[in-house]
Length: 236
Ligand SMILES: [Zn+2]
Image 1: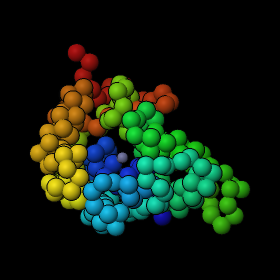
Image 2: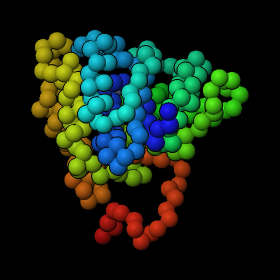
Image 3: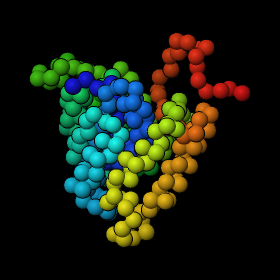
Image 4: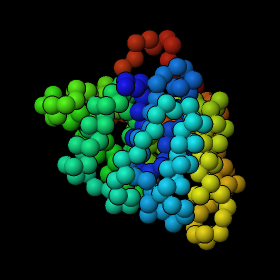
């Protein structure tokens, strides 16, 4: 398999909240997209890992994602071990993405910032010829960090105005998390609150680039521009 874009995230339902609009938009452009979740969310208060996996497959269909897999690393105690890096690196060699989306390295949840580092190092390892004799080396060309939950200025914002509703539908397919049940008490936001919160965040980032809804990303390297006349994002 050779993907154009692969989003790697700590938990099922992370990409639906952070970069799902971009995944949908790229699939609509004809790119081959995929999602790789590192854990199955087995420490979550609501639902079961089996249920969440089922819901994540449903969400993937809504996001027009070609493939979604789960590495079943331990939830809430994700560690950047050599064994985790190797497992992820071999998966990257199998999926061969040109571009990888990782969570931003500043995050409240330890799994999120650990996934950023683990993902980066696995992308590097995946390119080493001698890593594994049974698979071909592959190093992603570009790594972009989804920065929606990091209080940093994005390097760029993707306009997801036309994809926002589909992304919301994908998120709401996690009925065990956002279904309005009583299990877990008041800890979990209900559908209306989730809509308002995600809508406000997407509006904020859209506003930075003059669109209705947006998703922010950070890159570590300087952006290369070929055509300054065609650049988007109004200055004044
Ligand atoms: Zn998460």
